[in-house]
Every structure is written in structure tokens, then in C-alpha cells.
Length: 119
Image 1 (cartoon, rainbow, N blue to C red):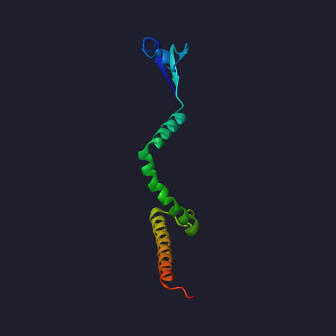
Image 2: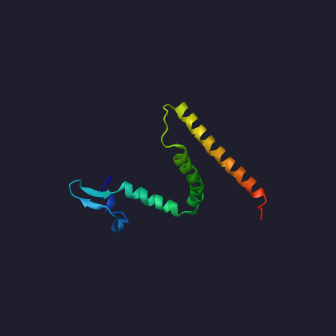
Image 3: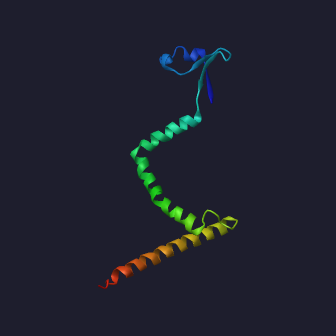
């Protein structure tokens, strides 16, 4: 993205000597070229360095294992239905299946821990 400023605006500016604007004789002014991708990346990196970002991201990091389990173990990434109501139903049923499996595993681990080992 390029922004062009009139010479009469740029040259008297007190920050003119530090400005990244380049003289463009064809446009009779100064042009500042901004790489929006690089600017957005820099903005994102500054935000990530903030402690508040890490607190918010910790929630997402906690759910990633569940998302992976749903995709790998229950085929959530390849639904065989179309339309929002059917997709929602399929997702709910797959999440239910995942939670039921976790519940059974937790129950079985409690039962096996409660049974005394024979010598």
C-alpha cells in the first residue's frame, strides 16, 4: 500500500529527517510504502509478547487435544452430511461419543484402582 503526501506537508514537518517517506518526483510529493502483511505480523508479534495474550491463548491450548481427538478418533474433519442443522447434529453426537468414552475410561480406571491387588 502506498500513501502519497504533498511536499508542502512533509518538508516542514519536525520529524522529516526521520521519516521513511521517499521523494517521488512524478507525484510531486513523498510516498510511504507500507507492507500490510509485515505490519500485521509485527502487530501480532507485539500482542503475543503481552502476558494477557498468553492467558487467553492458554484456554485454546487446553482445547486443542480435544479437537485433535475428535478429528482423529471420531472423524470430525470429514463429515458426511450437508446443511447447518445436520452438521450441528453430527458434531454434537461425535462430542457426546467422545465424552462417553472418556467417562467409561474414568469409571474403569476407578474400578481397577479400587480392586486390591492379589499377592
